[in-house]
Length: 89
Image 1 (cartoon, rainbow, N blue to C red):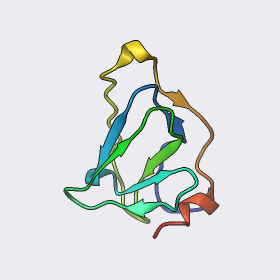
Image 2: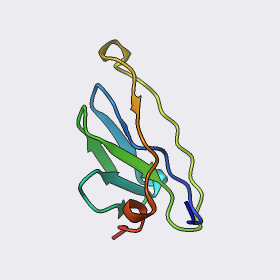
Image 3: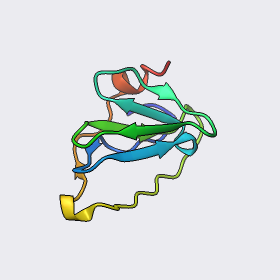
Image 4: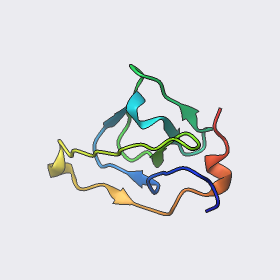
């Protein structure tokens, strides 16, 4: 990875989840990454492969809280590729 930013690895949750504008970037796999802004909220359906991250040269904090743990834990997958990260729109 040669970029100046941070991302989570790709992941999936067994239950619906959400992320908000404090995360800066979001990509449901197969869709271009998009920048989130204050007040933006994205609902992520269960079992959708996705990642969270920071815009270039901007840090971010990823705080995950499992509220439906009876459905199973998050599944962590491969790192986000430079190619996917650069799809920021």
